[in-house]
Length: 639
Image (cartoon, rainbow, N blue to C red; front, top):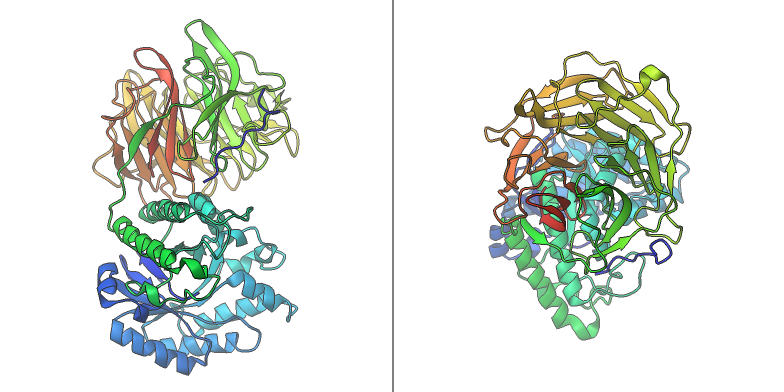
């Protein structure tokens, strides 16, 4: 696997299997089931071990013929059918209408889908002026007689930025009608980024349920290991990246972000019968090795799906390079795409700091981690207890306040991934006196909306402020104090906030006020001041077991999973808890004790905590226990 590259200048379709989650809408599917495209190609033993209850079959023929074919399979193997049909301008819409009618008397048919959707849609666009109208008609016809019959499509991670799927070619109104997206990873090295791809797919197809595609087969001859490279994976890489990606997909399923996990190919227990003679499937001299690698993947997959995934564990990193001095009260951001953590400021025993550091390979999974001091142009004043936020679109770190006040600074190229020298810039913000945030460090927390480029500052004793154009781009950064009814959390210090850009909710947890610690959760709707009047909502818990009341803890959030993870706190063990459904949009938050802290770092105060969303790793740096620390510890997985 690739390591982290740091700029010196910047630094001085045959068969698939589907593991179904739970039903969250009216579309027909069974919970805890597995679907295979070639259920008939698997041995009965494997079908039993996997618990096959669905099959996905491809059929280009007339509906009457396809229904007879799949109907026999449905009866003999006691499965429901997801049927893939070709996309064209001549037969697809008419066939879709017939399938809608036939499904009323053939309840085994659960979904009509289009495989390799981007490629088929591109081909359709070459022969018709309005391909989107064809797709819209197909979807409408699928629903004409049976509204419960689902429509889906297979999309690859490399398709998500394809212009064919954007508004100009495939309007949002049409994309919103997709019921399922079968999201597959073409390139092995993209697999650890699966959570990010889920978020992209949900943004493109907002009403679709995501089915996670996983190739449980030797892929070395089919495509390069990396999307931008030419080299094949080694056998070890092919296997390791497959299992790592599958574990992430299982986590996504457990949190509800993904409904199913889909494997390519079938032939479970009959691996030698697959089409290995095709040079795109395996080199002629390596067939035995391809089969052995595939069998190993299936055995590993069965273990992972049966819950044999390693429990969350702590890893103490030993980075190379000159490390930053021990500190507490620093700010930190995480660039998950490059696995780089950037740290600014804080305090040591002698006073405040204003240095900037990056840690490459921060989650400990991509080669040896290494510290570098960032040779940036300029620097904010000495700051502790400031808040760092990251905008991945512009690749900028945003720094707010701290002990120095309400100043806002922006750092370009904070992850040192280009040859452009990083530079700190003080933003010239615009506002009136009454709209300017107060300086009440310890009572305030910040969050950032990367979609609309808005920063939020919440002071539990004074209110909520928002700063537009917070990364310094697109217009003059302007402060506004939001008008919110006085019905939110009680006044408190040392609480945490996280933000979900999808629901536009800011979540507050815990804190201390009047000598009492809290463990309540609150959501601020329309938190960025857009989309409606902001309002506070207390969030009930969906579990009897919840974290102990606490303050001085840290919190991270993964919007793809709607999961918030908290760590430690004043007087608490170094325990870690995760709340799924953290925003409370679909159901009350559900708390799980991820790690009791017995094998982790000592309980810490004023540490920095960031989340690598790609590896589901929480990275903890510095802080206070019996002394000031500059250690790095990683807990994986946390969500």
